[in-house]
Image (cartoon, rainbow, N blue to C red):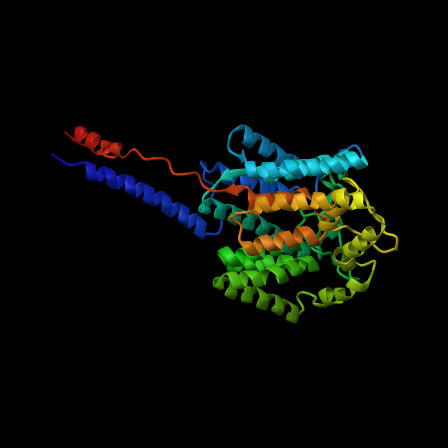
Length: 440
């Protein structure tokens, strides 16, 4: 009698081995692999696509604008929560509710912008959500983020070259295909390089060239730590430099040393990125003077560098000297716009915006909430450092829903994997018995 049992087991083993080989081949190729059963990763990808490619667009709502990327993100979370695919982390929820009490107190005390308060509560409620994921699934999320930023970097490179043949401003505005009322108008999307007619690259879909620079910098840190693919490093570095913004470089200057010291395998890729950038500067492909000339902007009260990195500290000094104790503790209320006594260009960084609106008490509770969300994150620590610095010090990102969604996906959404179910080992011999019975 012919024995079919061994053949059956081998066929199953070969099938599983084949599927594993296909998955490993897709992962090695650098392209994101989409498993139909991996709903968690599909959610991450959908959130990343909306936050990266829809951030320039918004819907008019009264006197303000409703970000389309946040509308999509909220709908995704509502659907996934209703379907039982994401859940609320109760430790985070408790801290979030305490934060809501503090922010509501500031609103009721000052009777300021209900719209700003509502967007604040809704946006940060996303940090309370989580879904189970394995380390491999989270690595797939990182790979998808890298692929999307890689596309944006390639668009930024093509955009910079295309302006020699077409109108760069019309290209950024999609040649009028998208109606103007879908743009919020609050971003400096079109910016020239120094006194020239050449425009900085924003990847076409990003709000500003500085956003291109910042997102590329975060992607470079991830690439150096996790994947180390030369083609990606070259494209991301070009995308960062063609944005001609110093904020992305400042993220790298801060995060790269942490990456190099925390992972020895990151040293060579970091050196490659540095040498490639120096080569672009040395050959004149990238204008070094466009970066070095901006160092003097820190002392110019009307310049971008002063507005981003110096002005908030001047505003904080003015606010401390003119505010009462209740205002220092509870803030001026959501949406409050502080006007300093002295004349200088102002643009509140996130940390100052948070402090002036919700006071010392609200800032303390908000910090505790953020710590509870970032605790035990799967995201590499140097990436978290770069993102937190970007969030706090490179602009007013308190209600920047696209950046907040990216931080949720990369840092807080992926929770621990589910516990393995108990295996009924009494059934492991059933296939052999069935196969033997069919063989007889």
